[in-house]
Length: 199
Image (tube, rainbow, N blue to C red; front, side, top):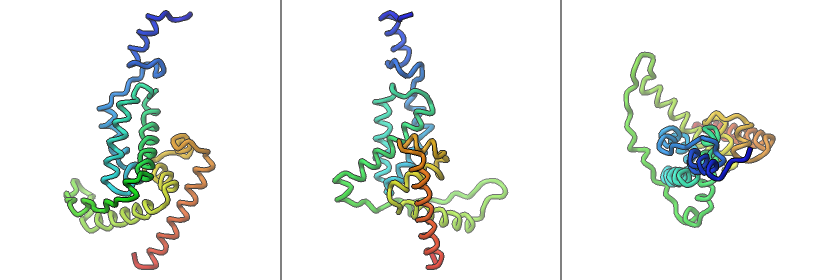
């Protein structure tokens, strides 16, 4: 049975102005609250500079406002946010501004330590050593070429399966597996060198 023009218009209005999202509507404010940390982590992982990551972060959510009608469901929203974040980081990396200007300053020295709550919490020394190791590994990941950083970040920091990464990055699963293997090998070599060199 074919819908009349009035029924089609009612369906479009009910779906937030889109025929193809079948009732799912993106609440941008809720999406920002829910996915801000993930988008920022992916942006930092791909740009290496917090200020650039903030630019990418803003652009991603501006695009979400523009394209929210095309989002089909919650899973599609999350994958779309990751994909757009990676694309924006790549765009920024290739821009003339990024090639000619370096913003290496960061606010790392301004961070304040808050004592942990509850029993079984780490001592400040243990927390410091754990953070140092984690930051060291993250720095080594950020030194990898972008195609390897992307798969490592999605797999280990966002807990994505290989099939999900392949879907997000629009590539074959075997390519994802190869990039993960090569990235691990590169990281192992760099970390072994660091241990031998006293890092």
